[in-house]
Image (cartoon, rainbow, N blue to C red; front, side, top):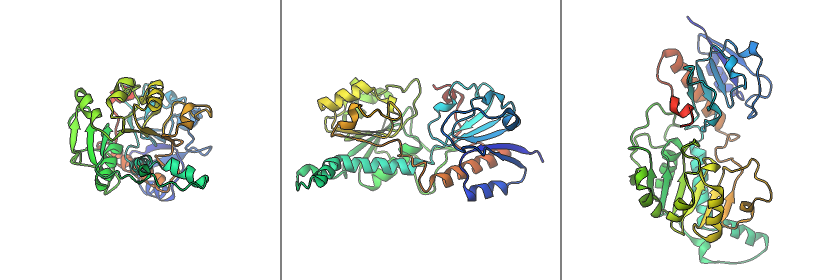
Length: 341
């Protein structure tokens, strides 16, 4: 039996490690220093040179020294860290962690819709100031509202499921027809595996119709050269002034200046932002003080939550088994995606 050599640079999960060790034909090494770090760093060539499979958040800066590398599993849904590494040109197969974070991010989106619609920020300020105010804006529902989901991958599909359960209408804008999700990781009982949940599906050329009929716009797409700034002044003006923007995807999907102007001018009602233009956001950034904005520090995916490690290890083990059996991998990225297209 051929031995598959694996390098793991992720926080260990007891059940996952045990399941991996139970698979015959594996030679597993762990990075013992700062496992799962989200800082780029070099690894000893002697450690990585013969490794065929890499499980990490960020590849080593000297990934070119991994001359035997055949597969990478990353621990994030976003995969910009794989751009410009030349791994696609080398024939290395790469998979992201789409589906691992979907429940948490969808729950964040639901929470933000309710908080924005009921103006919970002001209610909390009133509590801190001992102000008793029973204004109508604190008593609104989201049931019956229309949620627009721009991009219909794992996060979009789980957001649709949760939104439909709460009585929202779901409109989706995708690059093509919405159908079954093939070879995609999914927590059992979640998502929209058949692509049957949206009330309407729009194509990019129908952008005006899509944006003009929304109460909430949820961005659910990767950041690439094609999607950077995909929401600018024109797109924000297409939204109804009562619409709220939700961005748990990547900050630069939205033009920073256009967003600030729209929030100041009342072009949109408000925004919930979990991904940002600076890390960390500087304390003098105007978004901090806007009363119609909720900012969270990139925690919607709950990497430190109670389910992340279990799920990401489950995905990795499934993909190791598929890799060894010559089967299609879950969440495999195309060569075009690895180029950032």
